[in-house]
Image (tube, rainbow, N blue to C red):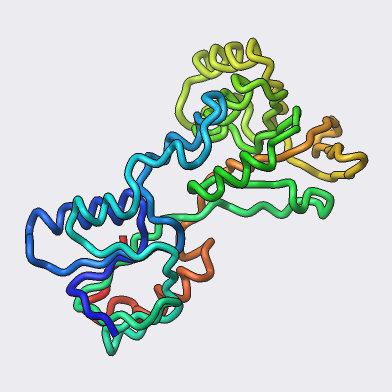
Length: 268
């Protein structure tokens, strides 16, 4: 069993930022950061503009996990999943062994909303929330021409713009009636739509997917307003749910905290 003063679960911006600030406050504190992925450091906004630049996931990495560990003087355990938390014992059981801690911080973030879509779309709907997702979607997009984006918020519009710039035929399906409806007034939304339309992006406003049929690697979509379109791949960018609501694993971990009954447990 390994012991650390502070154990951080999650290697995103929040996890690494916390480790950096703790190191500033205490140069001698033992800190371990674990992550179920590679734990490499990158800027998440880069995920939505890498296609037009023909970048692989490795090209988006700004610092490897080993470089971050050396820079912050911490231990970083990549591909390490927290499987059970024992708050009364200050222990976390992982797939790499048992870790003893004095302070435990969950910094795992939120997960993409998973929509209930017709069965024919199974295996063709992707969300991009990290480097692994990006690489998987990049691989799935090979030899494809048509990609449909679900959602017209900031992330959805960024992907629509990037994918169109990369040469894909892009369609956007959204319940809203303009791009960035929560952020832009109608006049600016219309201007943004005109610019994206000039890139070849097609918009299907005020609708969602009602039915889907797969034939000869073409996905034929019927929308709730009766319109139809054909695509080959779907990128879901309809937002993220609150962590405890959308991620069953994290929800179980949070429940084991017993609502903060143990003073050494925190979440971000």
